[in-house]
Image (cartoon, rainbow, N blue to C red; front, side, top):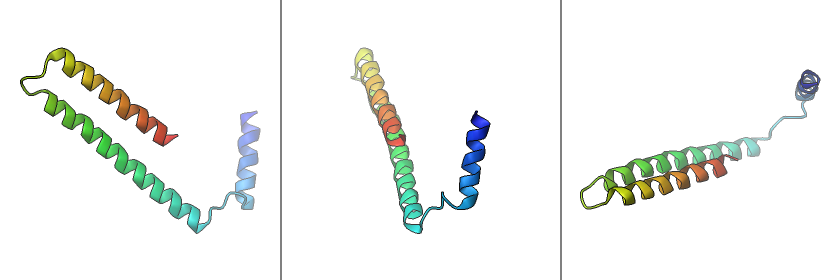
Length: 83
């Protein structure tokens, strides 16, 4: 079944049904660059928060709680932006 489906998609692609315009390609490029920039900043934010919380004066329970919640937040937004 999947083979027939993919074969049909290949036929439609070869016929030119899936050609993207220049505007669509540019838009996709901008969106992918924005997603990449967001992922880099979000991961840096996790590293920065880890370094800030490892200073003296922050309790271990609070440190663990904040890092866990911040990590969930970052990965949730990366997942949402990727969809």
